Each structure stands twice: as C-alpha cells, then as structure tokens.
Image (cartoon, rainbow, N blue to C red; front, side, top):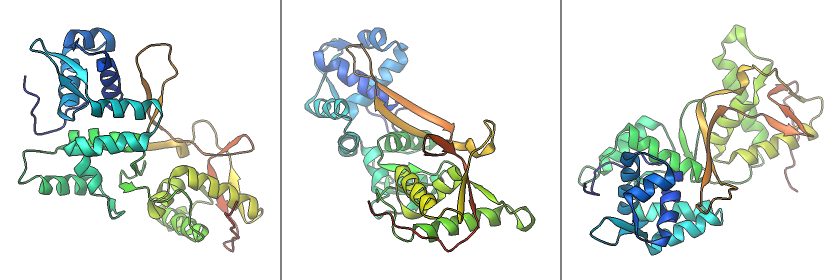
Length: 296
C-alpha cells in the first residue's frame, strides 16, 4: 500500500500522537500498532501511512517497521509540554493539507466551510493534492483542537483567533450581536433573555477573540453594570446549552500508561459563564448605557 494519496486520511490528532510516541522505541510494526493502540488493522495502517506522509515516523526496514523521525520527536516533545501552538506549527510545516488550510486565515478572515473547500480546491488545481468534505473535517478538527482557529458552534463558520483580550468597544459589539439575535427571532418574538453561548460564539467571531476572553469580559461587564444587565441561570434542559457543532478541544491525558495519550472532546452541550461558582446561561439588558473597564 502506497503512502501517497491525494486527500488527507481520516486520522484524528490523538492517533497521530499515540503512534508517533509508540514508534519512539523503533521497529514498530503494523501489528504492534494494532495491539498497542487497540485498533483495527485498517485503522492502524491508515494512521501509519498518514504519519509517514507528514514525516512524524519513517519506515526503517523491509519488514515494514517504523520509527519516529526528528520531526516526530519535536511533535511529541511539544505534546508532552502541552505546547499546542508548537504542535500546530509542526503539522503546518509538514502536512500539505493542514498548511494550506491554515494559510486561508493569514489575513484574519472569516470563512464559511463551503467557501473554504472551494478555495482549497482552487489552490490544489495544479498540485497532486485534493480536498473533499471529509478532509476538511479532519484538518479543521486538528486546527480547532490546537487553538489555531475557532469555529462558530452555531453557524459553522471558521475564523482565526487573533486576540486574547477583547477591545474597549466590547459592550457595543455585544449589544450589536444581541440586536441581531433578537431580530432573527422576529419582531413579535424578541427575547428579553438571550443565550450566553450564542452571544459568545457570534461575538468571538466578530472580534476574532478566544472564548475565555469573552467570558472574562462578560463577568467584568456584569460586575460594573449591576441593574443595567443581568445574568440568569437556566433549567438543565434549556435550549441555550445546545449547539449544532461541537467545541473541539485537546489536553494531555493523566494516565499511568507509558504511551502518551490525549483527551479529546467534541462536546455539543455548551457551557454558560461562571461567576462566584454559579453557571449563567442567559443575559438580559435593561440599560444600554454600559460602563466597561477591562484593565486588570
């Protein structure tokens, strides 16, 4: 089976980590991968071939055994340090599909999934590489887990995260998003209470900021504007917790195993914002003249 293939194989980030770490000892066969990773032979082979193509491992004998490359060593070192930015950088350099995907966001743009696929297909016209919806899902998941991009959990839009803090005009952007959400509900269906998860996703997309920055800013806004805005809880089955697309994350697993593993989540139940140990899922605005001082 050749390691050449025009589209990226459906291999998740956790499997790349596990296989690359396994091959640090060298002379690991496909059967070794099957046994240690507890996967089918087909899945082990797919992971081996994709890891070989992006230079995380290399074949070291005619018996089809594999060892970690120097690139793979840097990759695993970064994983063990939870340096996800460096992990992403290694993949960006050595995976042509992932590199081209991240290249779409160099100017900080926001891109719909179908547009991203069209752009990638256009760029690949004179190369040996191809893209389809599956490959977009794979590399998009890598990028989201590593924090290279975020995806709006309600509309699916991809965007680059360029800021770890919100700008001074945060209240005005938040109110604009709130107005848009109220408008989408219809003139006679305006909501007094708006979903914080929805506000978070659309505001982060507009500001190109990460979700933690939004939460910090909303807590500050609530503390500085008591009586003007109100945070509210929600019943367990509220629709405010539901999203179309899962938030994809990754962290180093706390395991007794000698194999480096990761915990990955694609949770579609959205979190609210926490304040003083309580979770709040709704925001109500009573006075639009809001104060905001986000300086620590």
